[in-house]
Image (cartoon, rainbow, N blue to C red; front, side, top):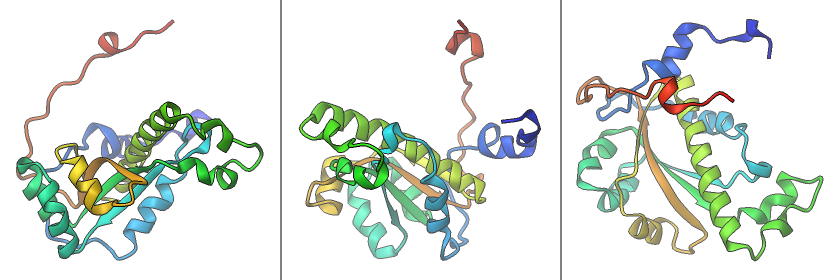
Length: 198
């Protein structure tokens, strides 16, 4: 990509430098089609062999939030229940069944069938990537995010995914974030602490 396509500083701030993990939300509801817009951006992010194992449950209604509530760690209940939406970022343990559609030029399905370790590794790593793409997509559309891992995955999966095919990875509340309940921003590692150039 040519350097002239570099994003402006305000956009970089919005996506990274000024973005915060939100714990409180404004009451504004989400636009009706925003979840489709988020996914339509998310789906273009790269995954290994285009496996795209990520699956996304957009929990928006009060009844669905109340169903999610018992599976949350105590410290996450208010953050989820007051958010306009909480996404269950999950993965499909049989993602490889869709490989004929997703990688039509070659038989990629056979590389996974019967290889449980590869299936698990691919599903977890790439659904995590897709969850990060979802967060970037939400931020691009003017929303804020509150990702979290404080929940009981076993009980959530039994409730929301009883057939066992989908498994939860992490949760991400989305909405219009409030500055209330923001923690002081923690430092990040400097380049020389986290990177090598070889």
